[in-house]
Length: 289
Ligand code: 7PJ
Image (tube, rainbow, N blue to C red):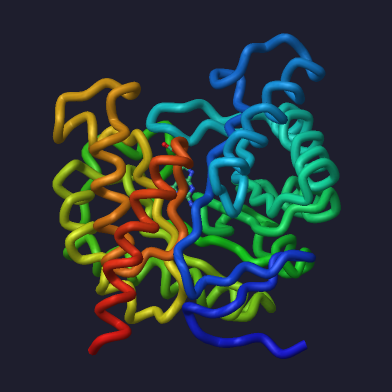
């Protein structure tokens, strides 16, 4: 099978093909202990089904299933707990909705088992740095989103500091991870990149990174961006989590204009409209220049 080498092309995600010549919405489905009523396995699956069904109806192209909270200060999750939360949901979404499912995980065992359960994409906030993660991802044959972070979620917001401009640090890190992937047998054509907004970054870092997002074009791989409901919106606007949608839409549109092709969000319907509207404007420029 030939694989196309450039950003803005078709990405083979298991049995799904993801066309990245237009913007895509990734809906967030958290199955972490703090995000769902803990009424047992059945209740969890029901909640996940309802939530995913709604996001798909609202135009989500991908459902991102995560069993580990990686929010600032969050505690690590045990492998068994992550497996028990994530795998039944991946299976259910694949079987019942034929959905393109991505799995937000850093654990090699979960990468392997999620691929078997029908996942189409690996989303690792640790960019396959855990022991065995590169090999597991290579073996899965699935595409991988490599995200920039410094340190670990528990401590990453304790005075994050970079010796270089933030976008340079992000590009250097991601370039190294791309090289590590290629050495491990994961071709470039199977990679997506994410600058990791809110991960080991001050408000200033986040604002600079968004302004300079186009610098990541140097890596020539499709960009995924997650800003939905994040603390940077709270800090800039003084808004609680429940009041961050308008700020998040502004950031999503700015990221799109600077090259993002997948937006990872909680609020699918409003994001779909915001980025489809912005995209119509951007396309007019392309067509008439
Ligand atoms: C991101 C993520 C992100 C990618 C989370 C939250 C924190 N994966 N997982 N990019 N954020 N690729 O959603 O607030 O920005 S968890």
